[in-house]
Image: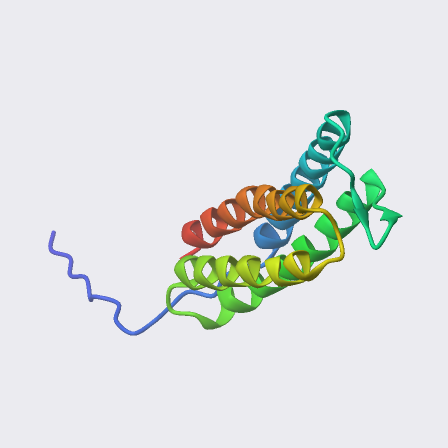
Length: 141
Protein backbone atom coordinates (compact mmCIF):
# COMPACT_ATOMS: atom_id res chain seq x y z
CA UNK A 1 0.00 0.00 0.00
CA UNK A 2 1.35 3.39 -0.93
CA UNK A 3 0.51 6.62 0.80
CA UNK A 4 1.59 10.14 0.16
CA UNK A 5 1.61 13.12 2.39
CA UNK A 6 1.72 16.71 1.42
CA UNK A 7 3.59 19.13 3.63
CA UNK A 8 1.51 21.80 5.23
CA UNK A 9 2.95 25.20 4.48
CA UNK A 10 1.94 28.67 5.43
CA UNK A 11 -0.81 27.66 7.81
CA UNK A 12 -1.12 28.21 11.48
CA UNK A 13 -3.78 26.46 13.47
CA UNK A 14 -6.23 28.60 15.38
CA UNK A 15 -5.51 28.78 19.06
CA UNK A 16 -8.33 27.96 21.40
CA UNK A 17 -8.55 30.61 24.06
CA UNK A 18 -10.14 28.52 26.80
CA UNK A 19 -6.87 27.13 28.09
CA UNK A 20 -5.21 30.57 27.93
CA UNK A 21 -7.96 32.08 30.08
CA UNK A 22 -7.89 29.15 32.49
CA UNK A 23 -4.10 29.26 32.80
CA UNK A 24 -4.22 33.02 33.32
CA UNK A 25 -6.82 32.70 36.07
CA UNK A 26 -4.91 29.99 37.94
CA UNK A 27 -1.61 31.87 37.61
CA UNK A 28 -3.28 35.12 38.74
CA UNK A 29 -4.66 33.46 41.86
CA UNK A 30 -1.28 31.91 42.67
CA UNK A 31 0.46 35.26 42.13
CA UNK A 32 -2.12 37.10 44.26
CA UNK A 33 -1.60 34.69 47.16
CA UNK A 34 2.18 34.93 46.76
CA UNK A 35 2.18 38.74 46.79
CA UNK A 36 -0.04 38.89 49.87
CA UNK A 37 2.24 36.45 51.70
CA UNK A 38 5.22 38.52 50.55
CA UNK A 39 3.61 41.74 51.82
CA UNK A 40 2.82 40.12 55.17
CA UNK A 41 6.40 38.87 55.44
CA UNK A 42 7.68 42.38 54.66
CA UNK A 43 5.47 43.79 57.39
CA UNK A 44 6.72 41.12 59.79
CA UNK A 45 10.26 42.45 59.33
CA UNK A 46 9.05 46.03 59.79
CA UNK A 47 9.08 47.25 56.19
CA UNK A 48 6.80 50.31 56.20
CA UNK A 49 4.31 49.63 53.43
CA UNK A 50 3.16 53.23 53.06
CA UNK A 51 2.82 55.53 50.08
CA UNK A 52 2.35 59.23 50.81
CA UNK A 53 1.79 58.24 54.42
CA UNK A 54 -1.10 55.91 53.61
CA UNK A 55 -0.82 52.25 54.60
CA UNK A 56 -1.00 49.74 51.73
CA UNK A 57 -3.34 46.95 52.84
CA UNK A 58 -2.04 43.41 52.31
CA UNK A 59 -5.15 42.55 50.30
CA UNK A 60 -4.37 45.53 48.09
CA UNK A 61 -1.46 43.47 46.77
CA UNK A 62 -3.93 40.75 45.77
CA UNK A 63 -6.33 43.16 44.08
CA UNK A 64 -3.61 44.84 42.02
CA UNK A 65 -2.03 41.49 41.15
CA UNK A 66 -5.37 40.08 39.98
CA UNK A 67 -6.12 43.18 37.93
CA UNK A 68 -2.80 43.29 36.09
CA UNK A 69 -2.71 39.52 35.68
CA UNK A 70 -6.08 39.78 33.95
CA UNK A 71 -4.62 42.45 31.66
CA UNK A 72 -1.68 40.15 30.95
CA UNK A 73 -4.04 37.28 30.15
CA UNK A 74 -5.95 39.46 27.68
CA UNK A 75 -2.64 40.45 26.07
CA UNK A 76 -1.67 36.76 25.86
CA UNK A 77 -5.00 35.90 24.22
CA UNK A 78 -4.60 38.66 21.62
CA UNK A 79 -1.02 37.66 20.91
CA UNK A 80 -2.08 34.00 20.61
CA UNK A 81 -4.39 34.95 17.76
CA UNK A 82 -2.07 37.31 15.92
CA UNK A 83 1.60 36.44 16.45
CA UNK A 84 3.65 33.95 14.48
CA UNK A 85 5.55 32.99 17.66
CA UNK A 86 3.06 33.79 20.40
CA UNK A 87 5.03 32.50 23.39
CA UNK A 88 8.14 34.50 22.52
CA UNK A 89 6.14 37.61 21.60
CA UNK A 90 4.21 37.40 24.86
CA UNK A 91 7.34 36.99 27.00
CA UNK A 92 9.06 39.97 25.37
CA UNK A 93 5.93 42.11 25.75
CA UNK A 94 5.21 41.04 29.34
CA UNK A 95 8.79 41.53 30.51
CA UNK A 96 8.87 44.99 28.92
CA UNK A 97 5.60 45.90 30.65
CA UNK A 98 6.94 44.58 33.96
CA UNK A 99 9.95 46.86 33.61
CA UNK A 100 7.63 49.79 32.84
CA UNK A 101 5.66 48.93 36.00
CA UNK A 102 8.69 49.97 38.06
CA UNK A 103 8.31 53.62 36.99
CA UNK A 104 5.47 54.47 39.40
CA UNK A 105 7.21 52.50 42.14
CA UNK A 106 10.43 54.49 41.75
CA UNK A 107 8.48 57.75 41.62
CA UNK A 108 6.31 56.90 44.64
CA UNK A 109 6.52 59.04 47.75
CA UNK A 110 7.69 56.10 49.84
CA UNK A 111 10.74 54.88 51.70
CA UNK A 112 13.43 53.02 49.81
CA UNK A 113 12.48 49.83 51.67
CA UNK A 114 8.88 50.22 50.53
CA UNK A 115 9.93 50.90 46.94
CA UNK A 116 12.17 47.83 46.88
CA UNK A 117 9.41 45.70 48.39
CA UNK A 118 6.89 46.91 45.83
CA UNK A 119 9.32 46.30 42.96
CA UNK A 120 10.03 42.80 44.26
CA UNK A 121 6.29 42.14 44.51
CA UNK A 122 6.02 43.05 40.81
CA UNK A 123 8.84 40.65 39.98
CA UNK A 124 7.27 37.91 42.10
CA UNK A 125 3.90 38.21 40.36
CA UNK A 126 5.55 38.37 36.93
CA UNK A 127 7.69 35.32 37.74
CA UNK A 128 4.51 33.33 38.33
CA UNK A 129 2.18 34.64 35.61
CA UNK A 130 4.52 35.17 32.65
CA UNK A 131 6.02 31.65 32.51
CA UNK A 132 2.62 30.01 33.01
CA UNK A 133 1.04 31.89 30.13
CA UNK A 134 4.14 31.49 27.94
CA UNK A 135 4.06 27.69 28.46
CA UNK A 136 0.39 27.62 27.52
CA UNK A 137 1.04 29.65 24.38
CA UNK A 138 4.01 27.44 23.45
CA UNK A 139 1.87 24.30 23.74
CA UNK A 140 -0.84 25.70 21.51
CA UNK A 141 1.35 26.58 18.53
